[in-house]
Amino acid sequence: MSTPRSITLDINGKRIPLVLDPRTTLLDALREHADLPGTKKGCDHGQCGACTVHVAGERMLSCLTLAMQVEGQPVMTIEGLKTGDGVLHAVQRAFIDHDAFQCGYCTPGQIMSAVACIREGHARTDAEIREYMSGNLCRCGAYPHIVAAVREAARRLAQGVSR
Image (cartoon, rainbow, N blue to C red; front, side, top):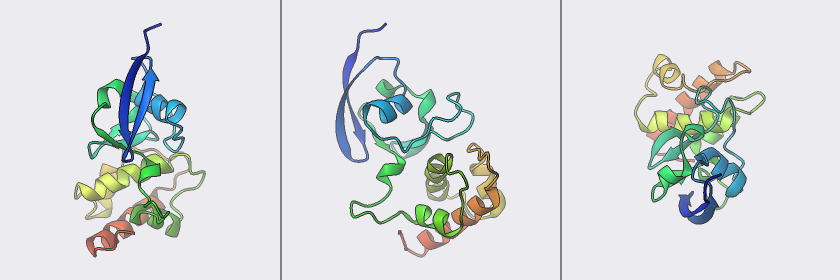
């Protein structure tokens, strides 16, 4: 057992003080210590993408990242995408409109990757979307709906419609 250490994480624009074992993953810090269960624990080996979050604007697998590594960097989870008044992000809205989830378990990671995919400029074609979303697995096989949702959200965001 390691000695717990006090850190402060910047999660969804809020500074959250935590006392963690230095071996605590960012995923476990979010779900079990910061009370943010939206990020899902899938394979816990970095292979499914269910735990994708943004750290300093870049997508990152939170199950492979130690919480201590991201201290001082902004962390964005699925809970942080909607506005304070509850308005959904364009990608969240598109996932609903295109029925881009079935069981929904992978959806938070899919949406976080989709937001990054669009921001990175990798949503110009369906093939490009599939390639840059390939790190996120959907055991239900909702891939055609996910691609349609990402395409629609990219179009709306390009038109300046952010929600």
